[in-house]
Length: 162
Image (cartoon, rainbow, N blue to C red; front, top):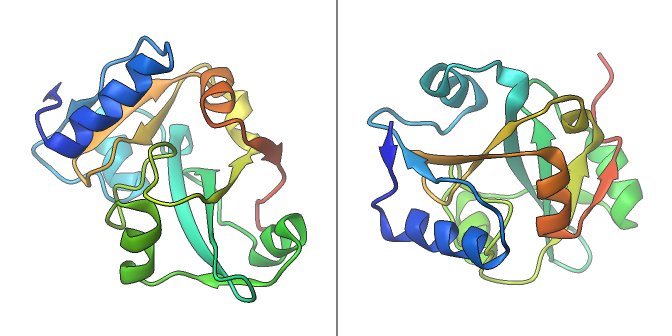
């Protein structure tokens, strides 16, 4: 783990600082694309990873970013209900175009275009969570309260029942 050096990760660091969030974006030599990879690199539980899952709203074409607990599967029908239109998984080109980030590095902040953002209520059970910082090798820690304040997004039940 080392301080961020990639320009995109540094942009995320600046956005966090501008928002008054005192945290450090860090980079790893190994990828942190998946929740499991990130948890292994950080040394935390998979559930403590705030993974970003991007959907495409079928009627409006807007991006819907769900920041989910790392061990949860996101229920598309719950997301559709919350955003009041059907959604489907977004492809890599749509993710990059709408968020400005590659899959595996989508940060909850600093998107290229306006997105609808939802926060998984299950993240609130942790004192600290880890979110992507714009690259598949960078993350930052924050509290659930900081994530909510930073994004202005609502907490929601988005977990797929098993």
